Image (cartoon, rainbow, N blue to C red; front, side, top):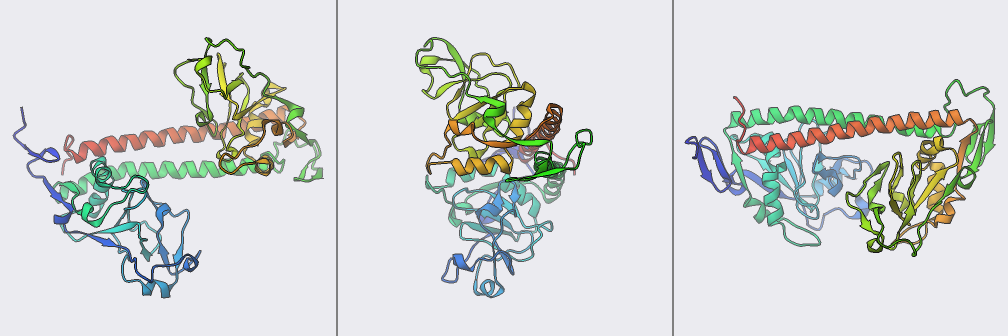
Length: 434
């Protein structure tokens, strides 16, 4: 039976003291960017300048991202008539990846910003709507589902000002809006802190990778002498050497041919299943006869999996489990170390400039860039002569990866929690006390 404190609306049952309004009735103004003759040309963008000119990469599902910025001069900014942001404005993407939303609050480090032609500004003029609540609403599943329904165009989805005006939002009383924003900000802070920790750990791992795998930093117990030797890869310790992969490992030791039992069932790892240390194992086995013709490489414990097709995507990993009838695509090279304790050391080397530069120099093809599996044998890497030093370097770098993986899992959990809580709060299934 319906609760007497609820009322039925086109968004479902909501509390009696909530409203449902269209954007066109909300006093949230929709402002286009300037698309006239003065719109900046490619050669007018600057690496530094007076005004940040937002591009598609700056507005993401997680808000603003300023990893890559383009600017315009003061003169160019003054020549444009529309699209200038004020504090507390929202920016909504309207072309390509539609529905990304960002909030120009006090945390944004730029004072002067303009939007490009693939965005609109949402400027709230309603004193009964919290700016932060508006930001939350536009990023919620409730609005995103509406946006996906009204976007038109398959290759390049688009929104128009007219369609945005038809979007419908639930509107609690202002004190409740503020309380909802306050509650969700707790998760936002935890998410932001975890993202910062991940970024810091990644930078630390990058520094360790560069220093430990070139011998610039060494563990005290292995640095018996400060003597160096000059090589084509720079100075390395005197007790290190340069080796080819074929000197310290075998590549593609076992490959099935067409005469394999067609009814035998295997798990198949394709190129999309390996990404930066992670292997996604399929749940179901398939008959060999039903597998793609590329399913040929037999995986063994300790093998280093190296994508030779599109190697720039860094589809590398170590098989640290005992595989039972697992096949890999011939788009991988499977590197089996002579010494099983070297798997991690070899794997970590795949991310170094020493190896990646060689790989990029061997890549052929533009649509399907790849290196020949036989070329993997000839790749060179820097090699400590001490097995124990190689083991310790590999273990330290693996510990870094494990730490980053755990933080990444924590981040995903926080994001799921926030999404679930947002759904509860914005549909009034859970109400905050004001």
